[in-house]
Length: 354
Image (tube, rainbow, N blue to C red; front, side):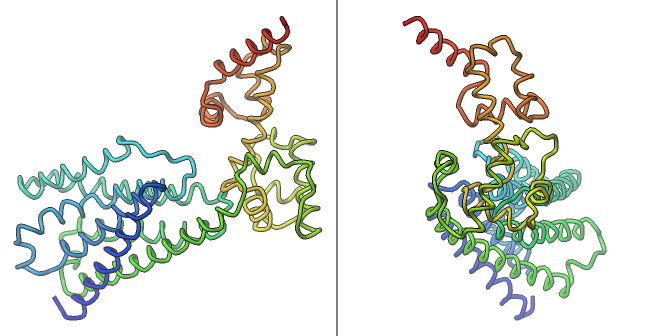
């Protein structure tokens, strides 16, 4: 291993370890930080375990690092969901893919099963692809402008790096094991580490900004109050309010931020910034679903609509099917629509009987 490659790998390890320690500091308040700490640690483990040094590869203490590095694609998938899905909730089963990859890696290392290694590489490609899909799929509705850029720069870049390395390792004569191949791998690790450092800085600045904004429920409760700020921004917020509350545009099938921006006559980026910074929403679906759920809750609590099927209420409010409606409703209220209706109607009947 050349001195240049040693320096590259050492720098990547040092930076990734620092990022892991920094993320551990925020583990208690952020699922993304916990996943980020594990991802940085597994990346550092890969930088050591993949080094083309025979003495290093035969050392017993490298085996735990190699096992940890094998699970990197699965950790990357969970981290991508934690960073880019605002509805992400940590749970043990989300880490089952990591356990599967590490277990298969153990069979590869100790049992020397070629089939198990092929399964590891195939799953690694699958999880890296899923992480890239996670980043791409939610980009259109993401209202946090800086995070939209990082979806491309970081998630897709890292995912493609993992895919390239994994695919190259599947090829017996790919050249990954030669000096140029391993040096390129080390350079990719350094770039990935710097990208994670930038993501970390972005996360801290975004948290500081978010702390200054009211939560969406509070922002929604301020409708009708005078809106401070630029007169043009006030006019846009008022036009947006009319479209949502009076025209009920949220009922339209397939409503997108592009369609809403067209109705307002402004660029998409300006509408994203308006909803994010002034109404404190991080994604477009939560903004639209807030209106849909408000209408559905009013209908479910109305004794005059007690016989209207819940599916009809959901479809009238703009939901396309009952599944997404039930999930959004439970996340918003902590109750199923049936429980909510029963609770509100019982309270209404008790009040009328007094």
